[in-house]
Image 1 (cartoon, rainbow, N blue to C red):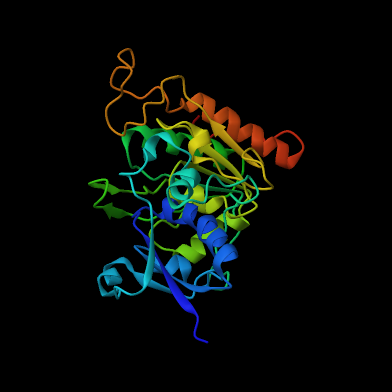
Image 2: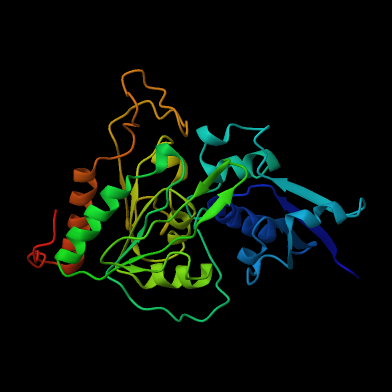
Length: 302
């Protein structure tokens, strides 16, 4: 008897949101595998090329070819629930009747196709500039890189420049002096391998911070206008396992991207952490990994 097919239409454009959807799809597969083969229509079919829970991945544009007699399930519908005010897993799972996922079920996973061809770096940075409320000044990234290389750590920069129609902006991962600049030079698989092999990954909250959650690497994520717990990374059933969320100084967490809702905040988002706070956390995490004092700086500016 021929098995039925269930098409999952994944409407989110962002890489991170698509990665958050994988545990949802995994649960659908666990519940429905006896009855359906799952297909997915997505902006990122490459994410599902080796995903064991999906039979076939198609570009989102191909959804128009779906026959009317095939069953389809839509994931990521902002008309149902407020995306910016919710845990992303719950935003995806609740509208389709799955309820909320457990901490165990929120484990992020990624399935690379390419063999690891990367080098190992002590620290991997992602300098991606997106919304004002989840971007760190380039001068801060360079200052941090100078401190890290001054302590003798090898540092790489990863990321990819893209244009986001949904956010109506260009998302840029800037080069940094004194680092191995791999931005726009690696496939997503090799970026994953670079993060997985690294000693520490530092990023604002974005697609690569979510991708890093599928590795065992120590992570530092910079705070933003959406409170950290709504975009948490779960590993070992724990949103704080090997990840530190560096918070800013704002209790509102308005979720806005470009205009601060705090009337006392001025032109900058106070939810974005200061340079000093981030540097202290990064160096603390590196000290914990080396189980001793850091090497003395060699004169790089701080």
